[in-house]
Image 1: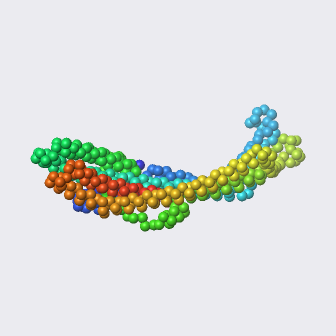
Image 2: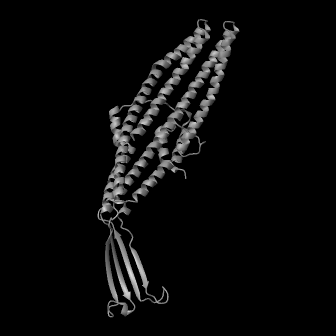
Image 3: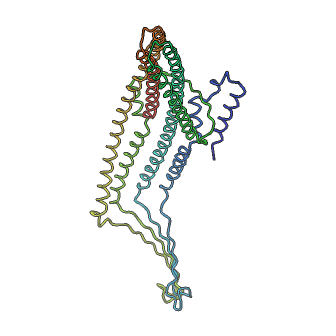
Length: 419
């Protein structure tokens, strides 16, 4: 069943937009934070991880419980059939006990397994958040790319009209007009590609919100860039302390250490306690004719006679498993530090590059195209110069979006790597 809260949130946003009118559409559209909240509430992956966490919690108390006792009834020495009147009836109860301390260690392992399940749940929340943010920013990027290409179509149409006028006046060759016509047709076809990409982005976002693929989606498509304020060293320390995979590996190491202690405790005996009540129906079979009932108490323990085949191998397997868990923990820590460092640098580069194109190169390229268009009309610039200016104007805006996307994608990946 779809999450009621996500449907309610989307319905409220849609009704608010309709009531407020088109002037406030940007204000009423869903933001990335609201989309993340809806995805976290409706994601089946998060719900499944939460249920597995609950299941692990219910395994803790079981570690303290002893084995179930075994009750036995024996109808012995029946002369006619097994269910007839017997000479002796025996009632037996047997209970096995582990060596004291084993249950506590097993409970510790169960608690850590529940903690690992909790970290898996938190990692699922983290990954759904990152996937939703990534899908949102991809939608914003493709929407902005479509807007830039639409403006480029308008500029190409202006170039086509200018070349048509110049060709009609015999100031340029027909090649200029044909080239402008070709570039305009190619740009119009590219617009269809962007519309397809936007529709696919909306489908991806709807899937993360656990909604039908074709559901209408009103989101805020304004591109915002906020610089990273934390230092790299702080982020590395934070990731080392908070990343779920590191915490899981640390608990796995502790569980492996406990498993080694349990393996060594296999040399210690486990006990069996048995009680038996005998009821002799034939007095002559009893220890004494006047005593037809007796009680038997038995205590047994296992002897690790073949320890070189079983216990020794268990201890050695637990030891190497512990070494593997320690190696895994060191590897995850090293990989996390390297990942955070590279993502931080890439995000910083994307942010600085996007500012350069937004504040400097894009205005210059736009001005260059306007000047080139006037120069071409006056005959001071050829068609190659005009096409180059138009291409620089288009490329500058595209490069800004690509740099902004690199920054936003790096920022999301950095949050995911930190945990």
